[in-house]
Length: 462
Image (cartoon, rainbow, N blue to C red):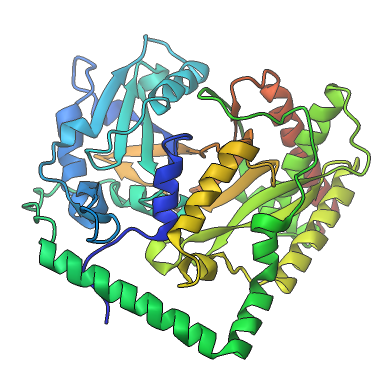
């Protein structure tokens, strides 16, 4: 029997708790051709934009919901309709000085990101940044990781846009907030869930052979969570502070696929190799020894679409050969590592998090452990998010490019995110703002990527 009460998952609760220390917000920065979004006097038509966004909110129910915490004894937090909803608090404008460029846009985005989302409101915002040349409009989208992971977030945001440039704006669907479930319903739901967990625990213990097989299959995941020794130390290591710096590199998805095909690699493999190449250059410039160095990277893997109700994405930890000097050899090593990891391990995090034998209190202990030890089981995060393959529009304004923005947590000072959109691929490098030589890292990764692409073209028979 499935309850209609939409409780937060254990992983969602973990991220909400973590966000009190390290913001768990994901997002994207996009550029729109804003010619059709400006009035004859050049002013941004925010009310028309709000009307267009509001007309599609019925497709994303979570955007009108907040986290409701019942009193003790009535179960864990749940998603409930916000008592009131004002779209102007979520779709806003930030004017930049006329003639602002990409660097100014990134600084403004960081300023917006540094302000926490108000937990009394639905946990998302759209910011339109004006003042860019050639009638461009920046669009900064941010939402809490508890709403969706990277892949689901991109799908969610795309829902607010339109694949048809000439699609008319329809009137917003009427919306009346539903009151949170009454005390009796919450109590009954909580008792039912406790009973189901208890039954599940007894069922698990009653099948020791099956349980042992599951634990054996999930052992690599368990070892990654708690059993690995600390990641190799580098000069990047530090507890993450509040500030962030962002650098970007751009290419096309077809070129990366071509490079991957030439070396028997996936797009993810090429991305990991490029990042490793950038780290090689950065650490060598800092006069650090990189001979034989393999840094540990956390990469998400998960259900198609990444929706939370389908299980969402979960991390897999891989070593990447930063010490390898030759780009082709580095990529070959990455391919071997990822193939071995995929073949030899069950991604058991989702099962572990949902297991009746793993109470939420144990997950909360993980947050305290991260605060004490700095999350030092990995050196960096890398994620690749497949975005819409075809262009999107907002009120006839085409979305030209999209940049992913990933969160940083604890003692993991570097997050790399790739996002494909309409054939383009943008890779963002986000670090704690204490890292002064981010541009060197990004340039090294770009050169590594260009070398792999050029090598693939040279090997192509066409």
